[in-house]
Image (cartoon, rainbow over all chains, first blue to last red; front, top):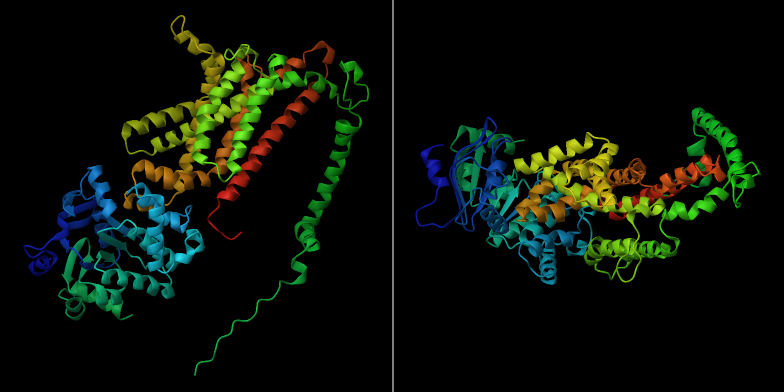
Length: 259
Length: 366
């Protein structure tokens, strides 16, 4: 990583960081999957992480709520260090929503129950209140009329919108998206992206791993490009797409934009 | 201007693909091999069924006081009729049969209440698991409220079979869940304790465990300290069945996609919350056939208690076969035992299928 990009991935002094990676390293057995990641996200910032498969972008994102453990370095989320302390992990997970590539809705619960589960059991919200809140978010993702169906009865795009609503029900301070549209039919990608754009407009702090470059151009404050476990380049969308610094970035962009 | 797209109307299926005739054709006569199999099966049924009906019903004797009364050449059901009470209750005093019956009716009534919508299911389950056993125990054993004491040595017949089966099933299920979770735990000590327990128990025949429970444990206990043989046997059966149950449930846990664990973790659920609310409901539903398999196996394995001198349904029938008045009625005795076990096990199997259908939220194509 060049010094210039290093500076872009870092904060200006005095700015408030909600996510801070310092020299983070991670291995899967012998495989060095994250190499010296230095990276921070400001409150309200929208980050798009892209890169070829196997570049470590999902792994980096999943370190933020400790679905993956890092072995070296420091990760601060909302001022709390992510380490083996279960209390810290649970505290952070309450405030960090996550949307997965394969939705991961709970198939044995109705849509409404999927949404109220965490508020009732983790936030100890009364059931009635939790249901009202759930209906509110279901309306926002335009799926309230399906509240009593089971996930198996919904299309992929609908399921992913439910998954986003489920994340929002916890009133998170950060939303993580791990390739939210990669498992969807082309016709359904837009309905999910529309919900995400709406969320971005409301000032949610978002970290999105995605290949949707149109989304990156319109929504992102910064685009982070990763390859082989490193952040190669991090820049504003305009600079990133118009004036990529690295040959690796140029190659990647030429491959995904010109097919 | 674009041409407007109108979907074509849906048409009914072709005539010869629905209805009774089509069904018979498809299932019995669809190919030369199928036709041959149908004819052979009908011939085998013709050979077996009429003589069986003759023996069981037409030539059977239904009442009498000894084998000598059975002269019709068919089954001697008089034997079953005379010994029926003993087959059901063992040597439980006749005047106290009502206590066993009351406990059974109470259990059926409590379980039936699950079907009522207004009932709090968690509370009902609590009553069945915590309160009912105490009530049932005092009903059976007596010694309180002026009920005469009945020694457990006199408990027998189908009553004992059911008691062992129900207690074994109810106790081994939660124990099996705990063992399965323990075996998948990240904590090395918990994991090794569970692995050693499961592998040890599974490596030993049930008869060995029953012998251990009834003969060897008393040798190890200090003088004067002893507890009931029935209780020891129940514990033995429960532990045995729990080890099998644990492996069945572990199979279900492994079938749950990693994403379900991750989604539960990501929303901040604790380990026990995510297991009880997310993982176990799905895992247990997947392995209902395996669980019921274990239940049915356990129910039939209770017959082994005759080895340690307890007389369950089969034990009582075998004992009655030695009655000098009824020599030569072994076939009827075993036929009756087989019929009773079949009714109960088939009932469990059908019930489990109904539960599976009720819990199916997968909405897969049939």
